[in-house]
Image (cartoon, rainbow, N blue to C red):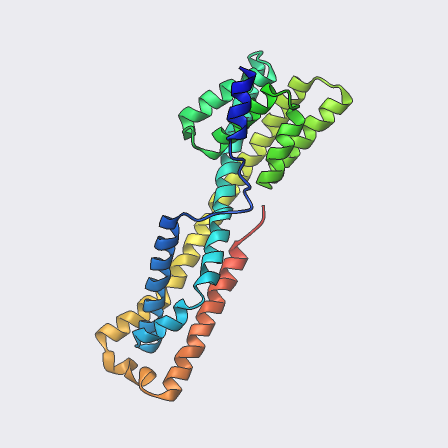
Amino acid sequence: MLVTVRRIYHTENEIDYSIYRMTIKECILSIIVIIGIACIFSYVFYDNLWISIAFVLPVYFYLKLIKKVLIQRRIQKLNVQFKDFCMSMTAQLIAGYSIENSLVEVYRELSQLYGKESYICTETKILIIKLRLNITIENAIENFAIRSGIEDIKLFSEIISIAKRSGGDLIKIVKNAANSISRKIETEREIKVIINSKKYEQMIMNIIPICIIVYVRLTSPNMMSIMYNSITGRIVMSVCLMIYVFAFFLGYKISKVEI
C-alpha cells in the first residue's frame, strides 16, 4: 500500500499558482482576440487596417497581461473552493473523524461539487497522500499555502503549526480555524460581488466611446472623413487613442481593490 502511495505521490504535479502555462488553445484564442481588437482600433481611430500590424507587434506583452489575469482568476477560484474545503472539514471533525479521515471525506464531497480535476480536489488528494507518507499535517498544508500564495490558506497553516507546537487540541483548533476562515472568505465574496458590479459598469463605459464612433461613421461617414484624411485629424485621433488607453488602465487600477 505504501509503495502504491509513494508512486502516486511522485507522479502528482504540485501546482505553483504564481506561474501559469497557457495551453496551445488558449494561446491561439488569445492571439485571435488581440488581432480582432487591433483591427477594431485601426478601423475606429485610423480607418486603416494595416495599422493593426503595429498594434499586434507587442503580442508578447499582451500575452503576459493575459497570463496575469488568468493567474488571478485561478487564485480567486481556489480561494472560493477553499471556503467549501473549510466548511466540509469542520463538518467532518464535528462528526468525530480524525484529520486524515476528514480529508478523505472532504475529497469525496468536493469531487462531487467541483469534479476530481478541480484545484481544491487535487490539493486535498496531495494532503491525503502526504499524511499517508507520514509527512506532518502542518508541513503538508504549509507547502500548499506557499504554492497558493493565498493569505487565508497561510493563516490556516500558521494556526495548525502553532497548535502542534503548543500541544493543544488539534482537532478542536482546526475546526474553529476552518469555521472562522470560511466565514471570512464568504464575507470577502459578498464584497467582491458588489465590486464586480462596478467593474461591469466600467466595462460598458469603456465600450461606449468605440460604439459612438462606429455609429457616427456608419450614419454620417463624411463627418469623420476629415479625421482620417489629414495629418491634424490623425494626430487628434492618436491623442484620443492614448487618452482612451490611459483611461482604461486607470479604471482597471481603481477597480482592482485588495480586500
